[in-house]
Image (cartoon, rainbow, N blue to C red; front, side, top):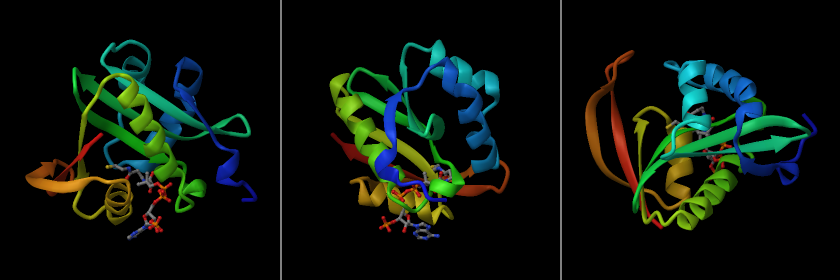
Length: 152
Ligand SMILES: CC(C)(COP(=O)(O)OP(=O)(O)OC[C@H]1O[C@@H](n2cnc3c(N)ncnc32)[C@H](O)[C@@H]1OP(=O)(O)O)[C@@H](O)C(=O)NCCC(=O)NCCS
């Protein structure tokens, strides 16, 4: 590996990042977003904001948010497999919080699969707390979603 997360720079995501973001998306989720959905969300939707983590010119992480006035919803967050468990997700969340605050956002919400221990750990360590359950939210496994919130 040899790469160090200190070398990662977080930038607003744009069209040039989408190919690599979509590769990470496909290898990270059992129901990945399509290329077109990701493209539209990053480049066209006015209520969304995405950041990309870049290391040596490559996208190694990304996160997205939808926001309306003071409320927001984390759409997706993923770190390329060879960069996981080194704090990149935590650092990216902190960047997302700053970006959201700049936009006037006061609350963030998200859903996470009950079995996704790494993501739940990431959210808990960055200040999210569990507020509820959506029963059988994920159609591929009928798994429950945990709903988590955070104030900014
Ligand atoms: C979730 C994800 C974004 C985390 O990114 P990351 O860069 O590894 O995050 P961090 O290293 O900052 O934090 C991960 C934490 O989970 C912990 N962790 C990893 N695997 C774990 C497991 N199986 N059980 C419990 N904790 C685990 C790590 O130790 C770390 O906690 P620590 O900082 O207290 O040691 C990454 O795993 C990922 O891309 N997963 C696939 C996509 C996904 O599930 N996204 C979330 C959808 S809701």
